[in-house]
Length: 192
Image (cartoon, rainbow, N blue to C red; front, side, top):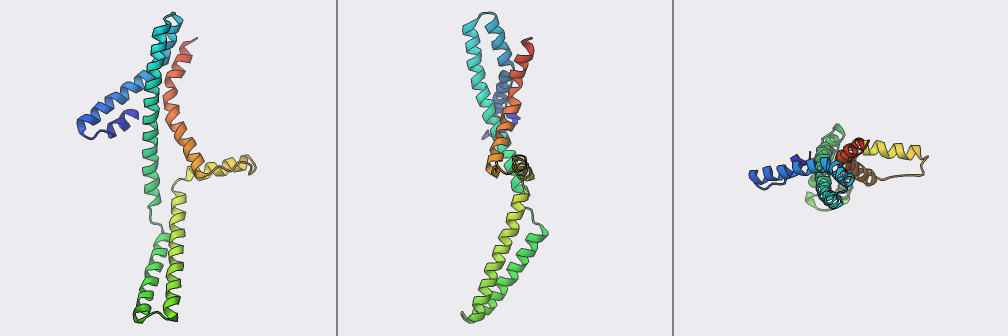
């Protein structure tokens, strides 16, 4: 995951492959570093263990930022694709707006009068209806967020009411951190 994202940052094919190598190397160090540092500490090689933890910290930070980039990019792409869907409600609202604009333009051709103002109001109403239809599609673009907000509100009896941004940030943090804790888990499992 981090290698793929690192590769996507290259401005040329060669740069992309070099970034991929750096991303994979960082992941490997982030995986192996904690166990190695812990073994060095047990062997009383404190300075070397501290250096290993320092190197691990840097590669862990790199891996987490790459994970954040990967998760953000993919979530944004999918959400945008879902939000740009054209539903029957959107099509109907677009057709109604187009008809209202045509009627307004025809009525207002000879000047602004009572009927022209009525048609102008109809155009405004139809624009609001289209905006509402598009907003509905955008909200449905990330059903996980909406469901999580409802679950938290339900479990807390309405005491906690997270926003879509709150859940989106929590999801991003979890998607970035969870793949990176493999090295810590490996270190803990080897400690026994």
